[in-house]
Length: 124
Image (cartoon, rainbow, N blue to C red; front, side, top):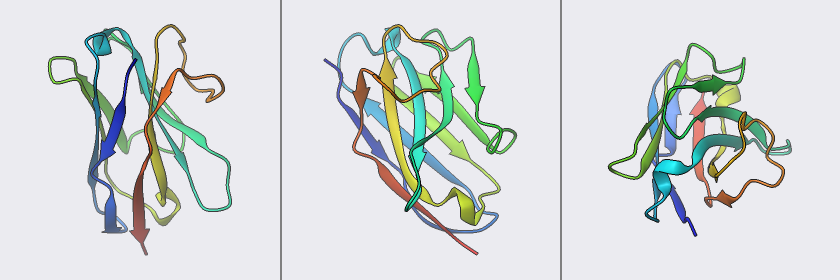
């Protein structure tokens, strides 16, 4: 069992930065592939970024490539999403996700564990 708790969301002006954190419980966190998804008002949830359990491989949606960076600290059971050059279209609830075996992790169907989300609002 893995529990995920996101933090770091808030209100930021366009062009600004935020760093989201996802704290995980469970001794086997380091063995899970981790991802961030987001859901904007009135839209479906979409993939943002993912990182393999050994952190040797990352994957990004085209819309955030070059602006967002996903990383993890297995000793701290935490995954991060550094978001720079934020745009109004980045406004969404951001969810942390964990899956033991799947890679790539772009499809949100059937993922093992989800956090409850943290709201990011980018004002233009």
